[in-house]
Length: 471
Image (cartoon, rainbow, N blue to C red; front, side, top):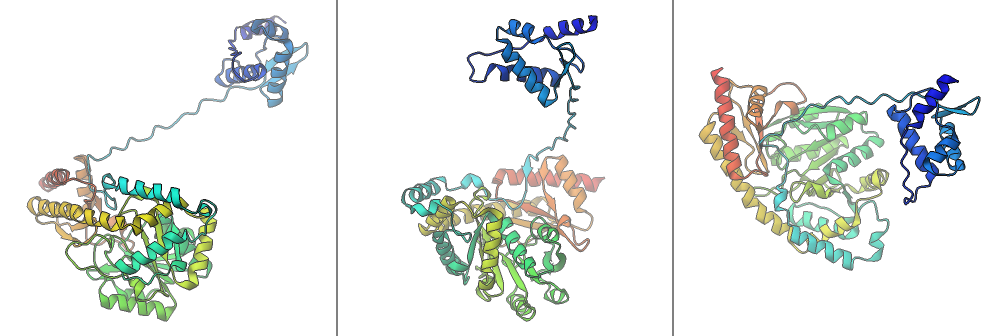
């Protein structure tokens, strides 16, 4: 009894603050206060709480309010009732979670990261005009559930744009609007895998973030097909058992080659003979500087090619707008995969982009940005030629990045690390190879850097290279 009275005295000193002007009932506030005291260790296991009458008097509430709080906490397992009317704490406090400190990632001061649009030049005024117009004028049914293929306005506008600018043979009914290229390739792979596709071919080197990981997660085999100066090695493709291949024929990622007319014809012949599918990622096709535009492969064989594009590199990745022009026999399967994914992309964004296209704003934006990116590329090439003349740039005629092959006395891992030590972010080619080592090179994205930053970054990189050679 002496121990119980001592424990009661200790528990009686517990502070419970009631706020009578809150809409929360008093017994709930008492429950929360005691529960928090137990969790934080202010009330330990076996400690007796004040009798309900005592606590009620201390808090100036009726005894029934305290009894109700005690009963609820007993039901939850926090308290237990003992003989003689004592209520005790039933559990030990949970130990505080110890959070392992995460390593601090130092962001580069000058980042030649690839695949980025200059979002500071996003046409806000023109986009806002499109948003306002569609919200005001769109039919009411566009705010309900829409077709998984996308709103008809955007499918009409996009098919017209692709047919006019990219030489595609896109039909509105065979287009599917998606949330960027990443979702688009996922929908295609799900559809063909469900129909029996077991092997996917990709360019080597190529991006490993989307198609490769998605195919592997679906249980498909992935084979890399070497890429040369003229793009994909068609003879190597013939030796695979691929059911589909992902290509970047207009500006190969990352090496920047353009697939020759002969290779395009051979790949389409391979697809027809084997009943295989070509997935054309029209990466960087809108930005070309030193060559004439090259039409999309899809326009040559719409029954064997899926055309995939997005607004991520042209407008902004945050819009999450992408599109697929698909063979008619796959349209229903890909639309069904879109239903399973998310029931359709946001209708207002789709209608705004359709309006943006129809008013010619997309064409105007591209015309504004081409000289901007071209000038940045020219500055990068000039700085490389002046400070690192033994670096060999390739893939410079289009896009928003280039690759520079390294001389034989440098390896890319050492150069990337030395550049990072000086605050310069640059990527190597090696991590994007599937079939083992090849020639070492660096990937320079230039779209989001101003001219002064490009010059400073190459200067720092040159100093890092000189230090490596001296060592």
